[in-house]
Amino acid sequence: MSSPAATEFTRFFRADDIGTLECQAARYVDYSFAPHFHEEYVINTLLDGVQSYAYQGGQYRAGRGALVLVNPGAVHTGKAGSDGGWAYCGYFPSVALMRELAEQLAGRPVEPFFRDTVVIDPELAERLERLYRILSDSDDALLRESWLYAVLGDVVTRHMLGHTPQAIQARHSVERVRQLLADRLADNLSLTELAATVGLSPYHLNRSFRIAYGLPPVAWRNQLRLTRGRALLAQGVPSGEVAGRLGFADQPHFTRAFRQALGITPAAYQQGLGVTARVAR
Image (cartoon, one colour):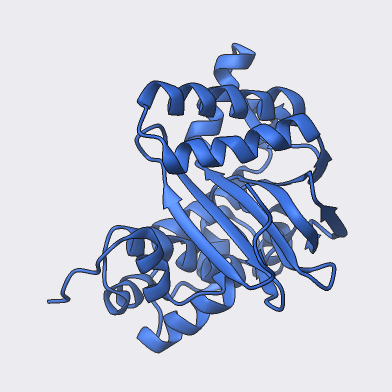
């Protein structure tokens, strides 16, 4: 994939015929991402320029040939680290897809996570770039699936570790709150109400949640609303209906928040996916 011209763009497509997976190619020059997270894993390979970003309390830079790896729920930012901005192709594989692959490789239940966020692995970076072209351009099901599992399998074996179920259990209380927020995303839940469900004080819940997920509950909820909104838009749901389903004040509020997080409007996102929003009833 040749380096694109130094103008901003972002393109998305999905490869759900293989697994729950969204793919993206983008270049950003002036645009900066506010702190946000994804429910999926993020696997980006840098094609040009330099990306600078905050992640898990640290500051990082990644240049051409580097991989940028982000765990689900981990808060991060993004901005240009050089005058020409940065360009990349990337993948958002679902937790279920990566967990299934990791468990097949490990032969036991694990919760895979990236141990480093910037990785120098030129051979894998080149294959990730080729994978993007295959998923984007080929209709050969065997080719697509073979390449995806081979490349993601190497991502797992080279750059991920696994939490055991026992280690996961230690986060049970804040995980229950996280799940409650996810299940009742449009509801006006209070911190006191959430804390009472797990037997913590509001102060300790706020602090423990931020330590576990990088954001306090209110910010995490707001980011999840955007993530769920993105999925609904991909299904052709009109942006006004998305706003109502997810607890946004109105459609303009959703549009502003979506553009701040992704750099494009909901309408442009649907257009890029080739999705036509159905007529609202």
